Image (cartoon, rainbow over all chains, first blue to last red; front, side):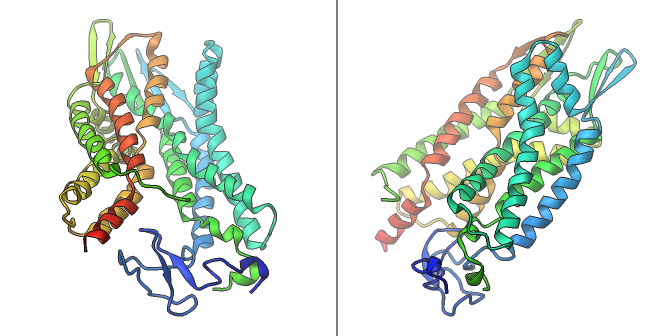
Length: 212
Length: 168
C-alpha cells in the first residue's frame, strides 16, 4: 500500500454505498456480495469494471459521431423541394442570417460538447490506466465538467422534435427527422452513460492499490 | 462541515413537489406552441413531437424525447411525493431504498432546461416563414422546470434517513 492511499476509505477497507452514501466496513478487503446495512444495495470499493464499460461506451459514441455529423439530421420539404440539413449546415444557416448567438449555442452544444466530452473521457481513461499521478484535482474537475455538459447536446434533437411537430402542412411544407439525428441521439446517450460508468475515485488510486 | 440540514427541509421539498405535480398536468394538457402559415394552424403539445417522430419511423428519437421531457420529470415528481408524503407523517414508504435509487438514476435524464433552449432554436428557425404563438403550456413548462429543479435540489435523502432513524 502506498503512502498516497493511507487514510482513504479504500485503505481502511471501507466503502461508501453508491445509493444512500452510508459508509460501511467491508468484511474482507475487496469482498464481493457485501450489502449496505441501511438500503440493501451491493457495496463496491469502486464501480465494478468501470474502465471497461467506460471504454466501450466512449468508442461507441466516437463511432456514432461520424454519421451524426455527415448524415442529414433534418429534411425540409417545401412545395415539392427537399432540402437536407446537417448539424453544421444548421449552424451555418444561423451564421449567414446574422443570428450568431444561436449559431454559437448550436455549435457548442452539438459539435463542440460531444468532442470535448469524448476527449476528456479518453484522456482520463488513459491516464488512469497508466497509473498517472498528474494533477488529480484538475482531472477530477475535468470529470465533473463532462458530467455537467453532456445533456446540453440534446438541444438539436429537441429543436428537431418541435419543428417536426409544428411544420406539417401537407404539400406546403413538412419537416422530417433524418438518420443523422438518430446517430446524434446515440452519441448523447452513450456519452452520458460513459460519464456515469467512469469512477472518478480511480483518478486518486495509485497503480499499486488498484489491484482489487 | 460537508452537509447541513435545514430544519424544515423536507416540508419545503414536499411543497415544491406538489406544485410541480400541478404544473406538470397543465404543461401536458395544453399546446405549448402554435404555428400559423398561410391560414394553416398547427399546434404542438409536449407529447405530440414524440408521436410525430414515431410516425416518421424514428422510434429511438421518439422514446428519447418522451423520456427526457415527459417521463423522467413525471417519475421525479411521483417519486418525491411517494417518499415525502408518508415521511411527513412519520411512516416508512414501501421499498424506500428502491425509490431513492430510481430517483437518483432518473435525474440525469430529466432535461427540461435543455428543452427550453431547443424551443428557442426552433422558434428562431421558423421566425422567417410563419408566426408562432406561445401557448399556456409553455409558461407552465417554464415554471415546472424552475419548481422541479428547486424540489430536486432541496431534497436530501440523508435527511429522510436521519428522520426515519430517529423515529426507531
